Image (cartoon, rainbow, N blue to C red; front, side, top):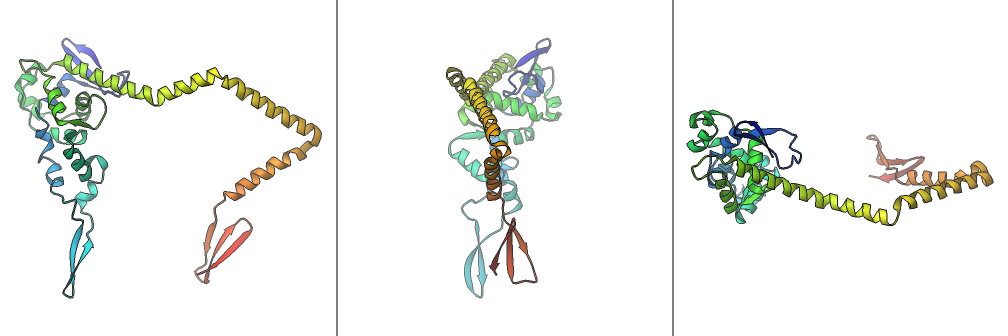
Length: 286
């Protein structure tokens, strides 16, 4: 996951980039993410879109309706905020599910880290920058993804609260500087997790099918069946000529006819709706 681009500097790739050939981020970009928080609480509570999201009452989708002194309930229309939250990762239902199980989400990490100020002077110094410089620099979305890859040990969208803070702390040396080696090892470990996942499914299934096919000589069986089919057609042609193709042609025509969907033809001036299928017309009274 790392390759040297300058003395004591490295770049990092996504865990899903198994060959490390895609876009990369620098130590400085990673530090600009990590130096803005020390605990998940800083980007996971009352910040950004979460301030409004956590106020939603998921158990009250109804609104009161009073007509002629009688009170009833009517399902209220979704607010613009609720419509926006229908994206699964940022939905209030997903948020509630994660909170109940003590899980921090990748989505909110990426969305809210940039709203926090950069305050870690030791980390800034380790990449040759100042707190003020990094605080003014925009957050790299790719760096956010790489950081959460390391924290989640893969490309998952959630991680336990305790693990999140524990792994975040492990990317700093005792003097507070950025530990690029530890972070690179974490990204490499995440990459191995992703590779194993790809190998198990669908890779290992394909390997099993190939092995079974090899053992039973599936290719030889398929080629033999093809030869037998062609030989049968040749014998039929020799004995019956073109008429030997009549049965297959009729079967194909019947199949195509059976799957043809009726096309409704609506005549606004008539009192009936006609459904046409081929040459047939069925009439249904309105």
